[in-house]
Image 1 (tube, rainbow, N blue to C red):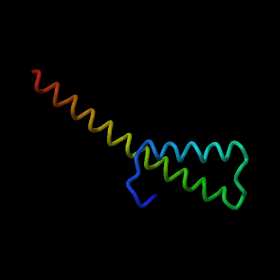
Image 2 (image 1 turned 45 degrees about the vertical axis):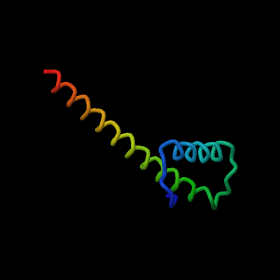
Image 3 (image 1 turned 135 degrees about the vertical axis):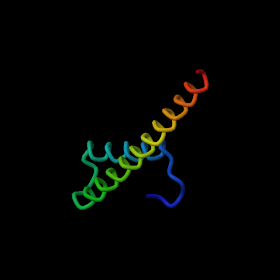
Image 4 (image 1 turned 90 degrees about the vertical axis):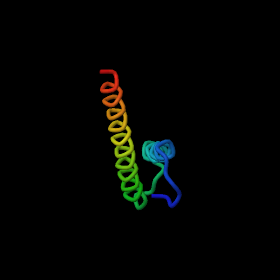
Length: 69
């Protein structure tokens, strides 16, 4: 991953670029495996971000529900 703080939006943009390159056959076979590995890392990063956000939303909803009782 990049040295500067990665955001979900930037990661998705990077992933979309890789997918476009693969779809358009723009990648040399020697680079293809590297890009697929990078795409897998981006997917893992995005999945982690989404899971964390989901947990935080659930926690907030639970707290809100308890405060209304």
